[in-house]
Image 1 (cartoon, helix red, strand yellow):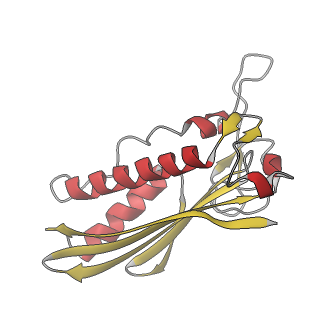
Image 2: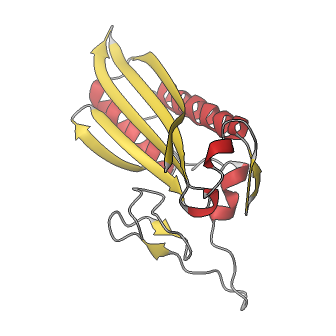
Length: 187
């Protein structure tokens, strides 16, 4: 069972002085730096997904680029859905109203939404700076507090656990992950 559209954030902006080619490249670089598996659906459109298996949270991004008013017009849609796979099992009906208590702590809808708003704001900041400094992002952004436990924990011998790689997209996955956080493929 899945709750579709836990939330959806949509925005349209024009970035002056940027070509459509630069805009789609910058968008791909940014979302990949934020651990989204990115696929191009056309020359000027991309989609991507990220899956937090321990929470059952899937975030999806869609970006469409067009020439507009001497710059690049970008339509961006970021959505999230919670599935009952993983630790969210059995709590799906209460997600929208009550905080969700899972292995990583109490997570509420407001925390998901705040993290999404920060992610969108980071995206626009990067895009507006891109025409002056057309480089991939140097930082990967800070993971939201509810996602920090997704990082592999040290083993009893003091050595960090080696992540498994998704057979579909090659993104590292935790040893106990049921789904790839990059493309959502069942592991």
